[in-house]
Picture 1 (cartoon, rainbow, N blue to C red):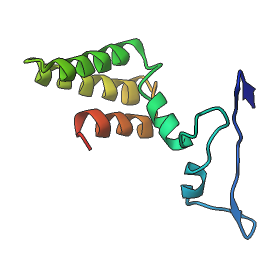
Picture 2: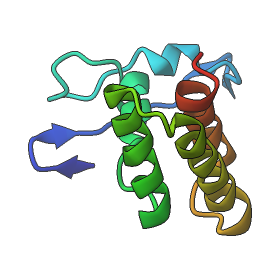
Picture 3: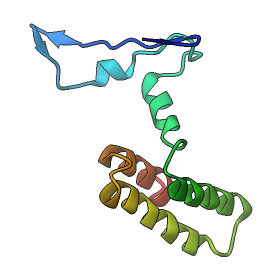
Picture 4: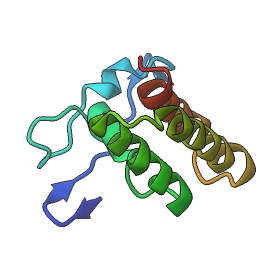
Amino acid sequence: MQRGNVVKYNIQIKERGVPMKDMSAQKQVCSIGTGGEPAEAMRERSWEYGLPPYLQHDLDAYKEGLAEGSSLLDCLWGELYGSINIAEINDGAITHEHANYLRQKFLWGE
């Protein structure tokens, strides 16, 4: 599949004719035009953009609060937590994996 200057390849890795369940080898595959950034890192970074408007707003507000040392950080944390849950559970706008990425990176700090 080609979009602009980026060519994306769908690679299926098989061992003895059976698709591998361990996708670690696929995580090392890079798309042409990414500047050598691993595909996994690109995908995760993209998970912070193009979100439902309410979640994008709360994520941006939380990032801003962190950067400025806001005294309202606990409130911003709660808003982001709720928005991630609504986007995943109620609206089905993001996957469980996507929601966990956002929780781990921004809420749990891991």
